[in-house]
Length: 313
Ligand code: PBG
Image 1: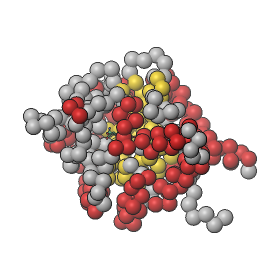
Image 2 (image 1 turned 180 degrees about the horizontal axis):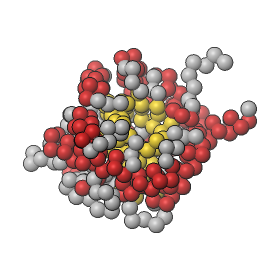
Image 3 (image 1 turned 180 degrees about the vertical axis):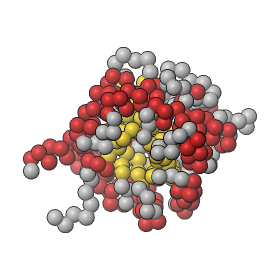
């Protein structure tokens, strides 16, 4: 009765992977319970999530072919664009379709943009790719594009491209404060991304030591036209979520990333922690810190429990 915080089914966004050229869903070893979907199994999964009351999914694509620019990210027949068209046809307005907007799943070097001669990502050249990808996703039926590449000026560039292509109603969920975290490891297995030459994303993602800088990144994105902003990862960055909440009046999302999920799953499998209890506690903490929306690989599990609880009332 006196609980200040509740995790509700409509707080949840389920991250889903769809892979081109497979006939059966493929398990992801480091993400127990999560799979790379076929187009068909994706449709079934999204319908099941809708029936449980989950309002939204975010899609990540695993293409058959990769190249230096990541051109499958804006190919109208690219794996995510096909998925978006299918899901829009199935769901109409019953499910908010979010598409992750980056090129790292589509580049052969695994970086989030065009790599210049010096080996670093070329920020401004990369914006052009994001603009094309945003329009391709919107045309395919995306309700929300979610730029995750952390290029400076990406929100403004994408907003312009969408407006020009008459997609002014497409929402931008900006990965605004995204840290160069070691917790993305299992995700990179899920999308078959290996950053070339043992590289990392430290020239464009944020230093975990810095909090004020994250707030500045968030302010930039809001100023550029972001409709929703995100902090990522979530559990180790609750202070950033709380600061952002105190400062912002627009919706705030937090991403409980692959490594956070995998740690809970692994310790749970070993019997070292009570997995269910830690799942709930971790999500409650993210909500308590101030997130309105939580992207989590636990979405279906939590929604199933909440639905059962509702029934037993
Ligand atoms: C980039 C992207 C990443 C994640 C979401 N979008 C990986 C990265 O920046 O290396 C990670 C999500 C997770 O770990 O669950 N397209």
